[in-house]
Image (cartoon, rainbow, N blue to C red; front, side, top):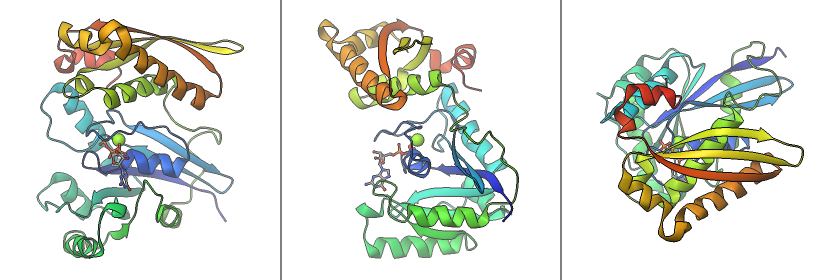
Length: 292
Ligand SMILES: Nc1nc2c(ncn2[C@@H]2O[C@H](COP(=O)(O)OP(=O)(O)OP(=O)(O)O)[C@@H](O)[C@H]2O)c(=O)[nH]1
Ligand SMILES: [Mg+2]
């Protein structure tokens, strides 16, 4: 058998389970996952290697109407996934009705590449709802293969994997065979911190926060990480730090445990909070934070 390799791009509305699916496929926690919409902000690759194939998954931010500049770059990241895929995965939930006027759905109707339409979270759904969803999608995207899954419980995830392998083109690998992602350790640690913030705070804090890793140094027995958490306003700084610094300490502790698990090594983590006024609407700052 010839070697197979290609890009499998995962798109869908916010919060449908794109990152959960990619992590399940890759077997590593590369993308952060929370119950809040707009958790993923960057396009991130997760690579599965085998002697006979290399599958490059691409997790993307959820498709949304942008309200500020950061969301414009998030939408661009999602759009870019329509362009360079060998297999396209569109994730949805049974209760969501497709809008045939939606730009992404229109693009999928015209797509020449295979589209897998995954109806996720079926552990929360019922047969009737599921059958109705498949019927609706059959009208909208007749050529796409509809597969009910649960990314969380991994129901049918192995079947999706088989379908991807079936469609994957013959090609030499695009990345070295030991590559896991295109993102740096710095990026991944920044995301681990952002995940803890999304989980711990309510309302506007999760969306107003950006994390920058100032320094990441791997020593013999320890990884030493200094991170800055940026917020948009002075008031948010106080909420983030919390009474006697307790809230921030908890973010630090939980992030560190995650990092130690991921890197299999002891981690020293120091967090600082700074105000970067209205960064979400500032093109220069968005670029500086690594959004393209
Ligand atoms: N019950 C159930 N929950 C799921 C399933 N898949 C994902 N979730 C949950 O749905 C929420 C969102 O999951 P994510 O993987 O972060 O979703 P996403 O599409 O990447 O979200 P964004 O990055 O914000 O666009 C999390 O709370 C997940 O645990 C599933 O199959 N069943
Ligand atoms: Mg995500």
